[in-house]
Length: 292
Length: 337
Image (cartoon, rainbow over all chains, first blue to last red; front, side, top):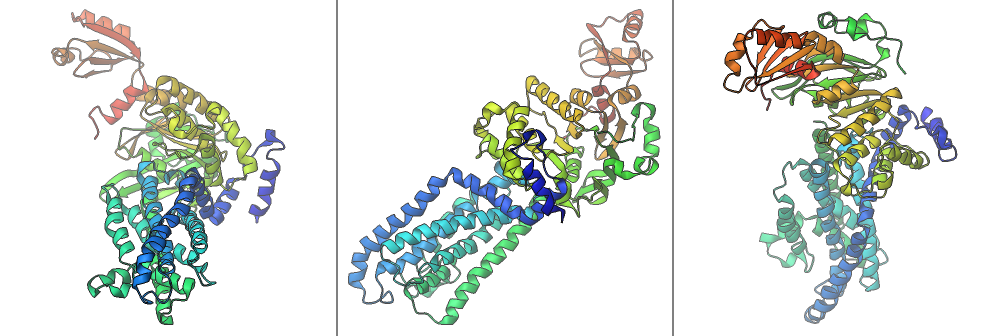
């Protein structure tokens, strides 16, 4: 179609002959935006992230090193001497490493899918610029999600390398937990993003989310001890927690943690289901709010 | 480039216009208009923001929407901009319906919103590059184009600054530069100079005038009458979602006001009582709390008549009628909240 031939005209008229600098036609713009719009917006979010790239990197490296030292090395000396194979026959370090990896992704999700969304709709109204361009609200939402997904992948990969250096991922399949962590981040983050997109006035809701949702999930999702060592009264927290489902999956891959195969499937279905539902709700909110 | 439709508002009175609001039908091919709205309506729940307005804009025209706050200007702009869907009526931008062809319509436009929504975390030049990417424009085009636009917006020195560090006028100019990255033939400007100091406004007017000279169609809302007089070939005055009048600034003044206005001050206490005694002078007398306005073809002659009646105002001023007189007459003087 025309979109194939026209870009080359624009490219050819670029830097070599600035006198005839011409944009391609609106029809080409629209066709490209319809096709690649989500990527164009993801590119913008990544450019902004580049601005705090060091924070991302330090968070990616610093957090695992600190936790693995404190818990996996320090606390482990106490735990390992007092438990007889309480952690599926692996060291305490290997037990908590997948949990820390998953939790870090979820905590990043709690940041990337809250304040920036509020910024987009309300504070600096960043979403309204692209909204006036050929991009659609759906593409703005998915572009944002894609960029954060990339951050999950990068951060989890760094985390995994550190874990591997600590010798805490005995299985050859440990790297799969990078993908599991990314999935867990999305399954927690996307419903949160839908919620963030629905907030009109900031009354400290995000601080509440951190305090009363993220922190309890982090503590009671079988992170530092097996979930079944908790009384039933609080065990349900783990069952509805993306951190628990993600952590259990991560353990399967990183040290061959044994659980019924059906449960493994259930973890995956739970995480994917929550992520998909969150994505759909987010899209609906974006379309509704930007279209007003 | 102007199309071959020659629009001569001076020769057409408002009554004639309102009797045939759909010029696209009476003057042939609707494609000669870049924007055509028929009975355009937008309701939010029980509130009717835009109440069945019709207008057409030929290519190359500077078309203004004037109205008090809440008149429906911004809502109309959002519908033209293809970001808000109409409740009823029809709307066509470059022959396309923004409801079914949102991306195609928006690809034709440059948009300067009422509130700046620049990316403050990016640098000035990067804001232009990023925005151009939304149109799928290649970097080989965007890099030189961004420099060209920074030059146009007098921001070359600020290319590497953070947006945070710019003044209000600079941000506005950057927003205009951003809206031009795709070389749009239609530019939508929603209150482009609100909140700017006079210097910044004049620079902006100059830039907008240059674009107009290049044949860009300008659609702008404003509640600055001087801005409308400076920039608009033709405008509609909108109030409560309806069109109150349509025409060129000069034809509107001719139709809804007199050539001159005599402003008299007798002191707040006496304006009302003396105002009554002035009836009959000029074409119309309007008594305000702080002054009395006499609308007359010849202001000096009216002032002589006032003196002849033995009335001595504290101050008197004869001035030409402005669009503001038309605006206040059509939309009233009471505050809209």
